[in-house]
Image (tube, one colour):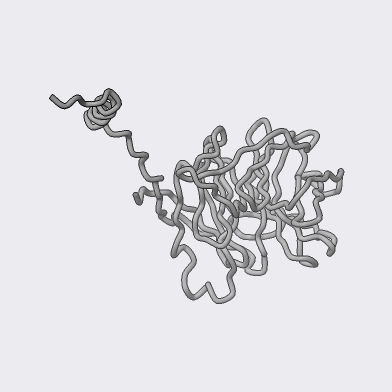
Length: 260
């Protein structure tokens, strides 16, 4: 009788066990959400929106472009500007966020940010960082900053020094071009520059928990002059999610609906 080598027997046993073992679970595709428009609000069609947030019923907005950058306090329902400050023409204004009685702003390539009084927009200080500045949001303990890459930085809200960060991934792949940010119900929402998508990000792991597809939100007749989708504001008291874009004539309060 021909003998079967032990190595062959071992291999056969390994293959048999593998064939009988349950298949490894397949990771579900990242959920995609569509939207329903609940209400529209006026928006300055000349505003190159960079940062957006709601506080005490008012909308705060920062705009970009050298020579046209500003921060504004706006009546949401009417679009009336309550307070405005023009930024020095050497700076391209970027994201903003509030912290206590302060408003904090990034600039694009200057590696410097500014701190203002939230009530009077008077300068209270400056801070520096490496790389580009794109957007800011916060939870109740830290600021969260995007810089156009797949990494989100965490900043100490008092010292404005970097304390850590996460890399944002979707199904294991880095997601870059992270732009305007908003903290919503324990998640970070992030516009993806030059797309109609918003990522819902787990702040502990950086994993994308879902995508919001806003394709078709801006009517075709408004697209000729408008730029990209950018700007997310959340009103926690009224549970309102509002989005807009650069040079868009309107802001949209939306409700998410499952799509996939």
